[in-house]
Image (tube, rainbow, N blue to C red; front, side, top):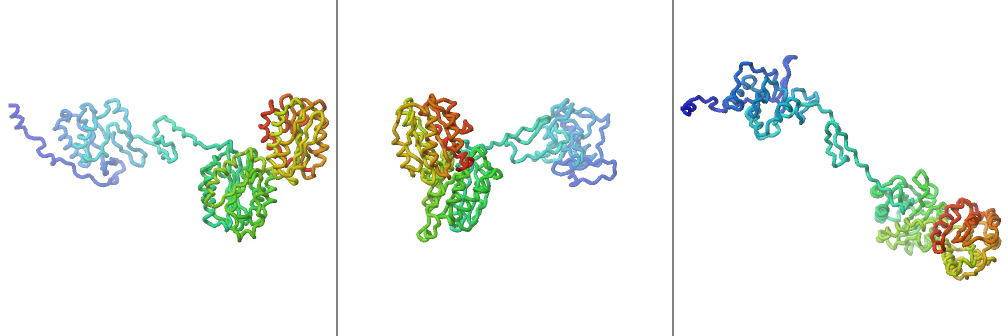
Amino acid sequence: MQNSALLQQPQLHPQPQQWHFPSPPRSCPSPQQPNQESLCIKFERQVCRDQKPAAPSADSHRFPSGSAYSRVQSSQQTAQSNPAFARRDLPHPANTDWFSGSRRPTDSSHSLSSAGYKWGRGSTGESTARDPGPDNTEHKHWLHNFGPYSPESDEHKLLSETSHTREEPTKSWEPDSNPLDSGIRFLGQEPAARAPKIRTQGDPTCKVDVAFLMDGSWSIGKRRFKIQKDFLMEVSQVMNGGVAGPMMGIIQYGDDAVTEFNLKQFSNFKDLKPAISKITQKGGLSNVGKALSYINKHFFSDANGNRGGAPNVAVVLVDGWPTDRVEEASRLARESGINIFFVTIEGPDENEKQNVVEPNFVDKAVCRTNGFFALPVPSWFDLRKAVQPLVKRVCDTERLVCSKTCLNANDIAFVIDGSSSVGTGNFRTVLQFVANVTREFEISDTDTRVGIVQYTYEQRLEFAFGQHNNKADLLNAIKRINYWSGGTSTGAAITFAADQLFSKSKPNKRKILIVITDGSSYDDVRAPALAVHRKGVVAYSIGIAWAAQDELEYIATDPDREHSFFVDEFDNLYKYVSKIIHNICQEFNSQPRN
């Protein structure tokens, strides 16, 4: 009976299509009256309401939540009140007590877009306290029945926990930001600090200031000029440049020299490659002499980034032969402390040789010590092979010091202790030390001259200044010195060297005295040392084992720490070869010529 009664009950909604919603307007009309409120909700299109929804009456019958009748009846009431707007004041089908009282559409954004409000994720205080919100499945059916019909689009869904909050404009994420930083900030969270950029400090074992003089003359041609730029780019990548390592500048020369960039312009050598690639050919003649004069007077300065504690190096790239004289400009540059390297590519052909100004310009321009400062390259195609050898030589700071002294005028007198306490083996070690020092100088009558005195109680002149005017003869003469043996009279030996050697020194020569002893002197050394100091002699003292420290300080020129050295045994003498040469270079320009 009950089943039959149910069958006879009339259907509440015979056809669903009878209560579908009409199409909403495509744009929001302007308010007709000032007191009217225009409410817009943007889904796929804008839907407008020009008056507030009426609250349901107190005696209205509420059917059980979720029943078919309640859904249909609510839909019809909504369509009658305003067919263009879907009501939001009905309880959710999955929760009967979702909101028991009358509702206004406060869960929708009802402010103008210009007010700065927009939809944001988060829960309002009311929804958080009452209900966490429906699941997406029930909400989808609810929107299907009571919202605008768009079942295939997810962008129309308004989650129950959605609230309208005002958000201040934030700075857009920048490409150079931390890649792990999404740009999203939560309330009270401080922005993540950016990691500092790591900058290389350079190779401290190669702390030099290098100027590359590139040939920009017309004789080189565009193709070889590009090969020259490729060579410099590769050198810049091989050298580990930085403020604690090598610094590099480039000068292009033709008729005149011009600085492409100075030493301080690029502290990071990775930026050098694009800078070198943009250099354009200057043209003109190959005036290398003018280029060397230019770097001597203008390039190595504090304004261009020159560092006082770093050796100055000039690497000259030459195609063929210079069109001006190089010797005088090179000498002045060397006396200013500039170490000059020449990289010569190819050479003049038979027709060009008759126009060569200085056929042996390289020998006159650079230090001729074992060919260290000259790097000939047979052809332009072999220039790339010279990268590693050149960088290795430029970074060999121990060898760079000789360029200041090898072609300059010096008279160096060695006063060697030949007393019995030295012994034959140690005496040979002393002679090897003397040979290592003199090897770094260019030996000739017009350049450096060497004389040696051996002493015990007495003194013996082994050879005088100018007696051996080439390096090979001088080194052989040092090897032939015989050990004498006897007492130790250092003061008398200094006086003997002043009389026999420095009295015959040429006016344009710088006078240098190097005393080597292993014990205390039997006589006074203060008066003889003071006498040679007054004559302009720069004196160095080297003590070994039992040498008296106070005597070493009396002999040495002030300051003592730069001119007096001590080693505990003879085998450690080699450690002071480069130091002595370096000190001679440093004071070359400070001591007057007599």
